[in-house]
Image (cartoon, rainbow, N blue to C red; front, side, top):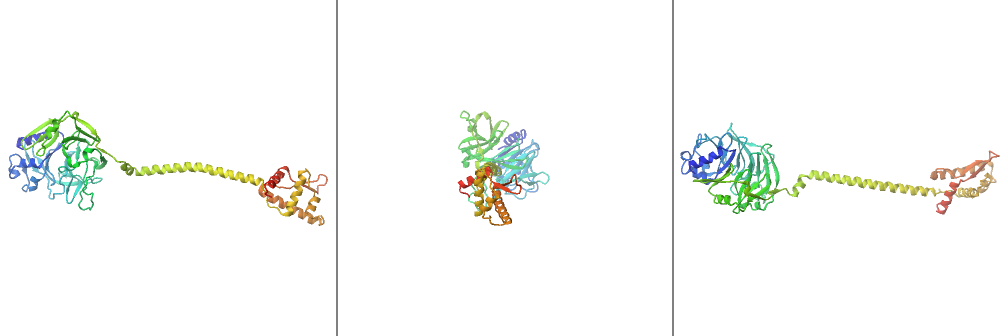
Length: 459
């Protein structure tokens, strides 16, 4: 790429919104030609205190522009260069990085006029660290996130889309790639779509890739970021992955211009600016208009599996289940309680009915006395003291003994009967003419009890 070509690229960066363009290894080698970077006529770099290291020539470079300035970031090194003026191709190294190799394939970007890089591989694993450049200390600082999602954007690896307007970064899929963990699945791509909110610094899981386009990851190449989504190529076709709208778009059949324009891009770099897709190599720069109407939606990009909802809403499902169990138990207990009460009342009623027709156990003399008084009462006749004395065999005893035995037997009968029926069986009344003599009888209600009990064989 000659000086004019690079100026055109820088101009498209400087006079547009904050952005990032990637210069491939082949292009940067063309920029630096043969020899030291400080001697190339196409572009000048200033390395304070040292000569450019070999890593400067052997790593991918990214042009980053925001409201503060234009920068060139050397991927995998942490080296950051700032353009000294808009009319010059003179870059000055502004970082003081000593260690490198931990963030190969990281994703550099600008947010709120700060410079960041996310993820990368090195030191036996792919990481998900977010690093922010401190312009005062000229060092990269770790910014804590709620979780670490491995991110790598090397060639044919990783799908990263940056929505600068919303301050969101989408990770299309990731490979755990941790050599410190002995796991057979450690290098199998995890087809998860996650979103990093740069304001809250939190990753959010959006779902698993479901579209057949992304199932064969080996054939997907990330090309450029556009307002409508990430432009990718797969199997000689081009697609837009709109993470924000959860949609996949493909070129309509009648628009093949972009497909022809993007073919043979292995030795070029491609970027979007102001409604155009630019493609440039070391000698030329070309563009083609980018129109959303050329694309048609072919399906969703991701979806959350049912297992996610079971896991995510586990507490709610348990709460709902417990509530249903409680309600079922309540209605069951309520109905069962009614049944229990009904059965209890029925049993008590039976017992009551049974008790109405039940007589206690009387002695032989008591049975004889009851029979005597019952028969007389059925004839509407009251039983005299003489009849009772004769029934009990007391006619030849003294008056005191007679009185005591009569009282004993009648009191015993009435006490036993009252324990069941709550009233006396044998009732007495005084003779009208002789208040000292008593007559004994059983009323009609008690006669019925005696009759039913004898019919049921309960005596």
